[in-house]
Length: 422
View 1 (cartoon, helix red, strand yellow):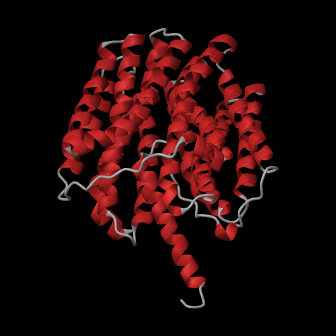
View 2: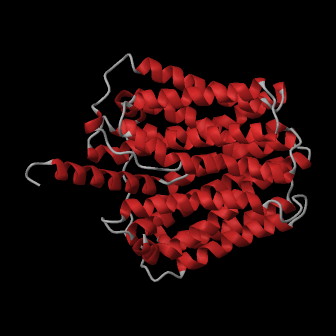
View 3: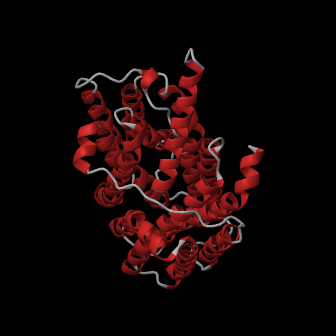
């Protein structure tokens, strides 16, 4: 642990500030949009636009890096992010916000690719898995802490947008001033979607449905909170609880997944989530009831992303895992683009508590499909399954490839210890 922090602290510190800025701007826009009188459908398009840019950035950033290098791409995208965060307050218009969200999603995606490439370069084979775990924890801490910043100023003014811009600007200093040289960058060509679906129909469909769940949570939670008249403090706690659940339950669920049929666990988690969201739709309880629902859906949705990737890897050779992950990222991104738009239409038509109805449907369909897939083929033996690697839906292909590589190394080490020739 100490060695990882010693080698990677500039990157981890920079990522902490970056997530503080990103986490704050996402929630702040939802609150500000409601105060500006924008319709739920309009705001859903604004929120969806982020994922359009994010998906495009994950595809184009590697080409930019190869042309001009890590440092220039990182600095350029960071400058755009800081500028856009200020312009949000200066241009409170739905179309302008949607266009800026596309740009900021593109920029954040590219920044993640660069930062995670650097992080991978600073890690060693011995501590790569631990490094990525700490990185994921830092990301979650940044997003959770950002929700508290929502309460330090009036969301109708400029100050919170300025704070978000400053946090992002400051985040680049420890990374760019790090003594580590820019790493050599390479990418893996994604697997075709047809091949990916044939390899793992459950992973393919599950990643798509989960993308819509994740984007609904990331983009529409603040809008839901504002529409049911939660205070600014309560909205920040509600959203922070979603991410806290994801952070605390990621590893226990991962531990269980390495010891049982992953399809059963995927089905059970989706079913629990669907039933809890259905309860949220039917029973309008108090604030602590909302926090319970937030913790459950956050605690389920984040680990499910890693579970779908791990389950897909169970049917692949090691050399094909990175390509399959690229395909799953794309499928997840398509779901993320559609999720807020559908949810926004539902909330406009049937009211804010359709938020829980949408989540219940997505998780319920995933549970039904997982049950169906259990009847189509046998599960691989748990002893031959790949290890669970904790990942975030916002991670770049670089971080996912590194996490899988570290998990594979752990698998090989375990098999070597069990070998009589060890």
